Image (spheres, rainbow, N blue to C red):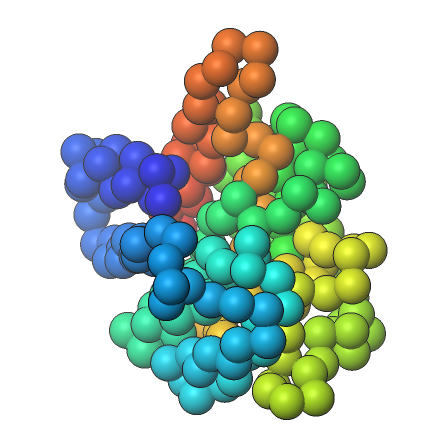
Length: 201
């Protein structure tokens, strides 16, 4: 959310000509209460797909799912989402490289080029469709987390269920890149790549 707002501020000041950009932040209250989610609950996304909650710590992807549906309903051509989605991406790529997931080779090239120009590191990861089998539920359309292995991929596959196939979409898992432990501060990762991408396209 901070990266999206940072990009919005930068592009608002740059004012690129002839560009329409929507900035969507999937914000909601996340407090423990008697009404909080429990394992086994079934929630319904705004497109009608049902999700069995098997891990209450994977709650952010539920709000992000509705944000992706909302974005598609705006008639956009391309979507980039950024999320500190999984610890698995940190295991795969460490603290300095974000994971990029997309079914679109064209959008992948655009975002990789923007990242390289901005000096931010990312690596395109596979969207291994066969892993989706592990996300199936017996009581809903899907569960909200996979079995453990390949968690960054199954997280991206979960989000893909909420994107219109006509829309080019890229998911950036930035869990490892947003914070510098030694200095105890955020990095601002993603702002430069997003701005560079918008200016190039």
